[in-house]
Amino acid sequence: MIKLKIKSIVAIAFTALLLYSCNIDKPTACMSLSTDYFFKDSVIVFNNCSYGAESYLWDFGDGFTSTETSPEHIYAESDTFTVTLNVKGKNGSDMVYHDILVYEPAK
Image (cartoon, rainbow, N blue to C red; front, side):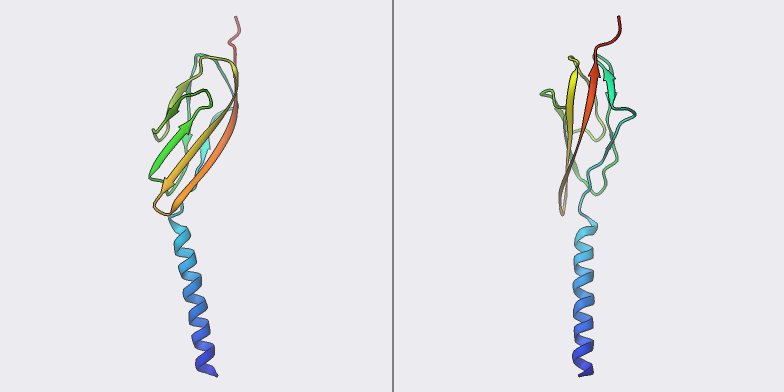
């Protein structure tokens, strides 16, 4: 009876460790911006705070993309855009998106 309990405990511990180790390298997508609104024809820096990723694909929502880690982008039009960051690592992928407002500069 005791051997069976010890084997069960060892099997549970091994399974938990295996599940935990599989999630260690799973990438997590993260982006940060200083504000949610910007001006047309101004440089916007997209800060990548992702971890566990080996490749990045940014979609700026205006037909342009980038594979840089933390790219810069200039919007030619004023509108609301959804910026998407897709990251890939050895144990999976993740995605995050953020809506930004691009305004016409004051004249």
